[in-house]
Image (cartoon, rainbow, N blue to C red):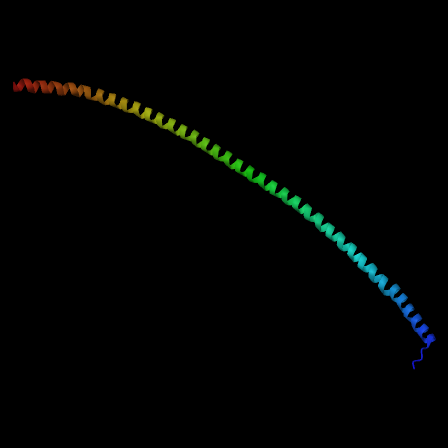
Length: 141
């Protein structure tokens, strides 16, 4: 039959337990410690990512608000410039119309003066022509 040697079994059991204790001290404890530290580090990184994500959202909202204000300012500036340009164009138009009216008046006065001068020049000749016509009518009659 089987011969069971308790002494050998105890030695094997002792070696087994010593091996387990040494594995626990040299392998399992450092491995568990490493895994715990890794888990802790991952949790911290996830927390940082979450915080960064929130900060990013806040910054994106601020950027959107700044861009909205910039667009509104640009639109306002463009509208003001357009109104100023229209106003300036109206002023220039009024000045040019005034200049045209003044030129018309000046031309009208000049034409009237020339008309009077021509009439004054033709008046003596008119009298001469009138006398010649009267003379021809008398001669013909």
